[in-house]
Length: 79
Length: 358
Image (cartoon, rainbow over all chains, first blue to last red; front, side, top):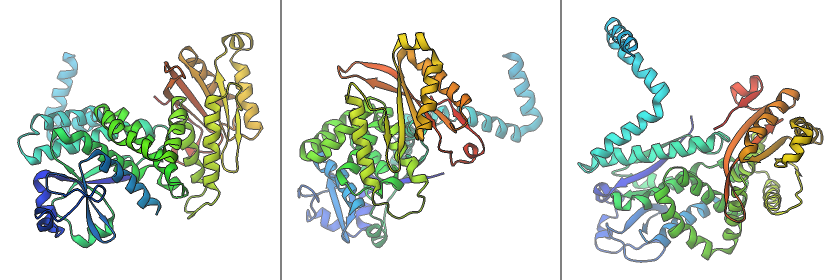
C-alpha cells in the first residue's frame, strides 16, 4: 500500500526542533526572516520550516506567504 | 437479538481471549471507518489535556479526513493519490538529513490555527502524491499547480469544509490574482470539473496512459497531448454542437450523453448500446456516457448492457458527481466509464471488471 508522510511539529516541541537545526538562538534574537515577505520571524509566527539551498528557511503565518509556500513547492518539484 | 447475544456470550466463554480477538477482527472488517471516527472522538474529548493527546487527536482527525476523501477519489482510479497518509510528529531533526529531505515541516499549534495547518498539510500531501508518475512528464508549471490545487479543493470539499473556505479566501484567490497563466488553467479545470470531467476523465485518462509507459523517464510529446485533451474537454463543456470523440496519440475516447427522453422512448436503450459499440469500432479505447437526474439509472443500464453485448469492454465503472450548469444550478450526475483497456490490477486482469462505484 502506498504511503505519504507529512511532517508536523507541535508548538511545544518547536523550540527543541529549532535547537536541533541550530537556529534557535538566531530565531530568539530575531535574526531570521520569513522567506517570502521578509518579516522578522519568532517562535509565534512560524507556520512552516523548510530547507532551501542548504539553509533552514521559514514561512510565517501570513496567508499570502502560505500561498507562496504552496506555490514554491510546485516550482521546486519542476525545477 | 437475545439469541444473538447469547450465542456471542457462548462463543466468548468457549474461546476466551481468541474469541475477543476474532470479534474485534470482524468489527474492524465491517465497521473499520466508524471505529476510526470513534477513535478520533475519543481523542477529541481529551485533546486539551496535554500535547500528547492533542497530537493524537490532530493526527487521527487529519488522517481520517484525508483517508475518507482519498477513498472517494481513488474509487475513480487507484493511481491518483497515495492511499495512506501518515503524520510524523517531529521534535528534532538532524540538520543534514533535513536539508537533504526537501520536506516541509508544518507547525501545528491549537484549534484556532487548525484550518491553516490542515490546508498546508493537505497541499503537501497532494503535492507529494497526486499522479506523480504523470506530473513528471509535465513541464508546464502553472498547469501542474492548477491540477494540484484543483485536487486540494476536491479533498477539502470532501473532508474539511471549514478549511475549504480558508483555502479559497486566503490561498487560491491570491494565486488567481497574481498569476494569469495559473488562473487560466485553474478556471479551465474548474469548468470541466463542473461537468464531471476533471477526475473521472482528464486525470483518469492521463493516469491510464502512463500505465503503458511504466518506468519510462520522460515522454516528450505527452504534455502537448495533455493540453490538447484539456482544450477538447473545455470545448466539450461549452459548445452546443459538441465533437464527441478525441483521437490523440495516447488518448482515444468517445462521449455520449443520455438526455433526450423522446429518443430513448422511440429507439430504446439498445440504440445507445449500438452507439457505444460503434465508437469502439471507430478506435475509441474508452467510452464515457453521461446522464443527469432521472437518466442516471438509464445510463447504468446502458453501460451494463453494452458490457454484456461487447467483449471488447474490459471494465465498466460508474462515477457519481454533481453537475453544475451555466446558471449555477446543480443536478445529480453519472459518468459511466466503459474501457477497452485491460485493467492491470490482479483481479481485473483475470477477467472483466464491473465496478459499481458509489
